[in-house]
Image 1: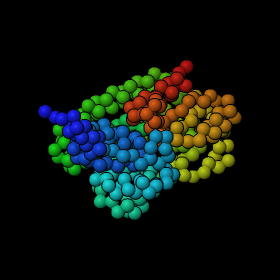
Image 2 (image 1 turned 180 degrees about the horizontal axis):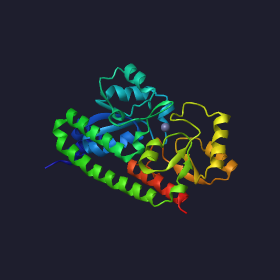
Image 3 (image 1 turned 90 degrees about the horizontal axis):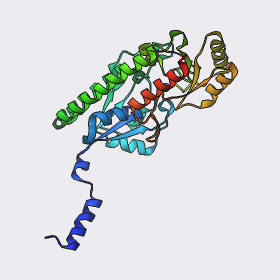
Image 4 (image 1 turned 30 degrees about the vertical axis):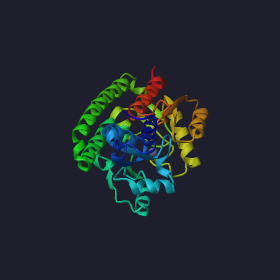
Length: 291
Ligand SMILES: [Zn+2]
């Protein structure tokens, strides 16, 4: 029988020492919140995921901290988007002297290109998110073969959810009159969404948020909003809302709400997971563009 004192000592030890399950988890770093969510879905309780650019953060212009370097140094696997999204990342990995293996998920999709180069926002097409999930499953399985069955089961369940999400978005956009499917966003983050689901996006800022928007760019957008029928102007969760609000007020277009472009919301928001953020965006579009 345990004495009272021994029982107390045991429970204290349990509080202080990390459980065996916790120490055995595979340390994984994801460059930004959306990839972090996908890795959690596939990895489940076998992985411990740290995200560098968190909720509502802008990964285009992120400045890493010393703590990010320490996280990268400890990671066994590092999942990144690539396609020019995280310009600060190579230097961070090098300076942290990380031995973690880097997986560039964007390399698995057919990248869209424009004058500025490759468009990194591949996750805005659910079919591409599925490609990311499959690559994550393969990477985790190679690093932790004992977990193969769990990763397969987690990925299968999640891929089925993504199929349902994709069908739901196609259906919701299809129900909107074609001539109303034109909106303004702040930066050009919805090219993949536009191509897959059939909503035209006009943006004053390019595929990166790094470049300043010139007065000429804004004037061009305002002309274009006036010339074409634009259903609504949307604010993005990672962007300053003033630009969108100004375009709306100068053209009389309505403000359609907030779209999640390059990051999830925090846990309390309505875009706390990838599925939630896509669903939220479609709801906002449908509400603004319905006749
Ligand atoms: Zn972006």
